[in-house]
Image (cartoon, rainbow, N blue to C red):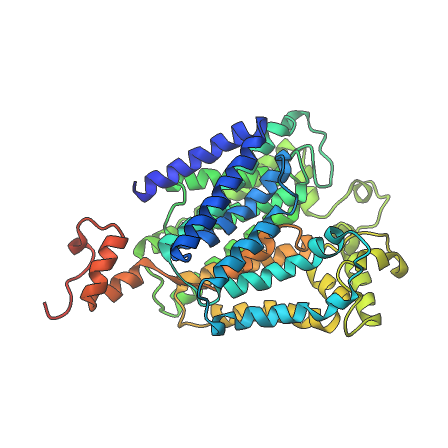
Length: 486
């Protein structure tokens, strides 16, 4: 089958999965088992040369929430982190050179010392899994992807694995949530419009939008046709808006803008940005952005004007004059959580208070007992100076690749999008979802665009012959120039 047929079949399959899996959650469990078992067994045979391990791990990003949403039997809440660690570790074991592991090992080394302060008398899931394990997955993802060569065609499969289950989540959410006209719209994240935790659902919608946006800039539709991708993006955007959870969509917009900025900057510097189809796609951006604005305004009308007030940071109290509009009100209490985290770091500068302990100690710093919502403040509060250096590393290291003209523009744009999405989600939702930290590592791979392969084939007859087979070109003479000297 060609790529368009595969993409369309993937879209149809995940629509059906949403419609059927919502009624029979056992199907969600069975399908997840099939995907993971097949990826593990096949990769064990070919030593992960086909890259199925990271495609399966990418699939877990949205599928994790799908399993939570449908209460799939036998699937633990943190299945993404558990299986993700298994898949990534297995992939690292298949011949990763030590030099490629160094950045990830440094990050992992910064996470280990504060573990001595862990309170193992409490629930491990509440202490380590919900807090420390997310940063651990990020370090593991960097170890797996750093300097890993991934062809553009295979990267499309990764993006498809990120986006397809996100659409399935949106379908299940549509079936479970109330009719829009019957919802009593307020000024907080709306569970009635999502059928589950609005923040988590909106984050997955944002991830799907980022994957579709990156594929759009690459000129490679995920679901067979650009129209299907665009409709999927609009659907996710609309469902994200009515969730009234701002973080996921704002992160997606920032990520897409970051990828676009890298491409435009490279073009202004006269760097090769690849196929001409990508240039033509950029001309559609001035049309797409106003279209999304119109959708926002229409949705605002459907919610009685509440959507715009929500994005302005208003609450019912501020609108009625009973409550002052402060930074803490705008951030839904996150600023006070951050301040209490910083106070903990001040008192426990070197090692912090230990993974998972900030929630228990927060009442001592003038705030209620609540879990951290910002990963950066959690890291410094619970892991002290080691957490501070971890934050500095994950914020600075992507710039080394994004600003390096030696890397293909496609790879740099991808890193900008996924790193920005991950880093901004960590700013408002910590690492509650596997996707938050896993996608950070994907951009560390070396993405080889199709046009680069074609240029390599010009002067390498053997490579030319192999690439014509790999790329599935029936008449390579129409695309690949003849080797020099012939």
